[in-house]
Length: 188
Image 1 (tube, one colour):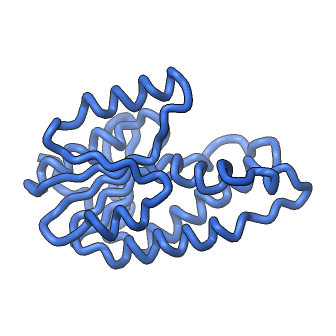
Image 2: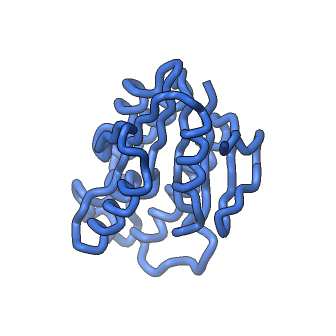
């Protein structure tokens, strides 16, 4: 079992690198996707990602069942790519009842804490090769709005928690990987 967290900005090459790592593993690959086509632009992004992946890889929509997807598919002899955690986080925080984000002192939904704990448990118990992709969103200007700041804070906290339990943490910029913890897994 190997778990790798791939962090970087939008279009930094994280997904492509994860796909190279999955291919190099020589194992059957399942991609757990968390995006939904809410508009034409997102539909085009999803289509682009699908076209980049080999057709024999299994794709599972796991936006609402990510931990369960990891538990089911990330078993010995299998490689799983999760693409991506920040979209999953956005869904977990904002789609059910986002009124909390408008409060002067936002209180995160209790369901979020449960989902986060379940994800961390699934990652630590995974027995296959797990490649987690996430956008590092906390490098820029502090965002306006308490809800947006809470999202950035939770993404940072999630990344820290995952970095503690993952074997490897890889920063990706301009398509180039840099090991922050462990090593950069083989990319073929």
